[in-house]
Amino acid sequence: MEINLVEELRWRGMLHDMTPETETQFTKEMTGVYVGFDPTASSLHIGNLATIMLLVQAQRAGHKPFALVGGATGMVGDPSGKSAERSFLDEDTLRKNQEGIRKQLAQFLDFDCGENAAELVNNYDWFKEIGFLQFLREAGKFLTVNYMMAKDSVKNRLETGISFTEFSYQLLQGYDFYHLHKSRNVKVQMGGSDQWGNITTGTELIRRKNQDSGSDEKAYALTCPLVTKADGKKFGKSESGNVWLDAEMTTPYEFYQFWLNVEDTEIGRLLRVFTVLNKDTIEGYETEFANNPNALKRILAEEVTRTVHGQEALAKAIKASQILFGKATTQTLEELDERTLLSVLKDVPQTEITQANFEETSDILELLTSLTKNLIFKSKSEARRQIKGGGVRINKEKVTEKHQIQDFKLLHKKYLLAQNGKKKYYLLKIL
Image 1 (spheres, helix red, strand yellow):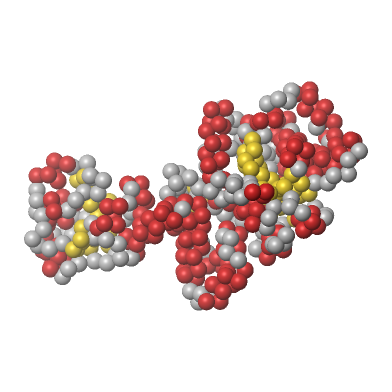
Image 2 (cartoon, helix red, strand yellow):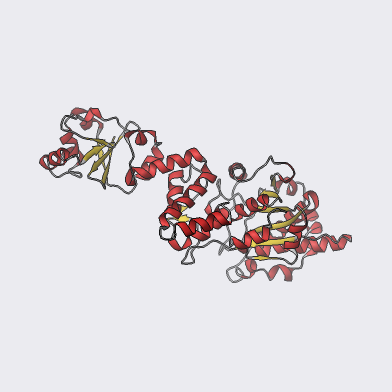
């Protein structure tokens, strides 16, 4: 293979553990690899990105990636890393979630590149054909309760209690691996380090079933470290919660800003894990911008946002970020969708003006004082002085004493952005 996958993952800090002979398998031949994603939400989030990038790196190294959407296992719920049992989702919600995840995975993997083209599979397609008694015969008899009890995902829940449903999850995931091994020649399962127990259940099930049938075929496991912040907390959450890959759940602007706000000490690691930039490029950037972490953050934010949302969305996110911190224009404001506009301005002071009051006056000084409850200026004389000095803008257009309120077009028919000086912004809502 042109790229040694294990060496690549090791350099990128994406290798936590692997079973013996895994590296040999990757260097020997094009290898089928899979990562599973349970459809617990209609979108994946940044926390899933590291395992998605495992598949991306595998495909870049010439191997064949399989992305498994857990239509069946999503009905049960993985106990790994959970302190309590998850609520069941109804089938309609699961189907909607599965479709959302399918679309997102298609943004990262090449499904039309010949021999190692990626494939999407859904474990509901095989589990729907298997009855309970058949599953016990096919999988249950090959793994002891002692073996399953030794897994951390089980041991960590013994004090608080674990249902038989969640206890069985590792057996379901193990059977997924066995099914893909037999039907698609998948030889490696990959995932986050918290999945080691579930993944090795699969390798053990395959070993025992192959041994039972007289086969010496092997299966392998590889995990990447869980990406955490410098303080050890889970990576991928903002103040408002998960940072989603779906633009309707986290706007491209918010997504872009998330990466601009990572800790300086994390940039190099995140560039390695979340981009496909090669070693020479990343190390070159680190040398060039050793004293300019913000430049490195912009590279990181642009690379990841482009991958997830596309070049057009990235361009809009960059324009949006210039509203408060750069040279945005009236046209920039008018081109932003309402959700992004409000995301950009969520922390600036805001006030409401009734439609009647707004339409009854044309005096720009009234708008900047009494109509806005003196939020922007305490008096007309203060507003007039600032206007004469060229320090007042509405929708990024400089205000003069000749202006009337009606000279400024409402953004989305209900907003004006007022500016007093370079850094003081105010969002006016006309309701």
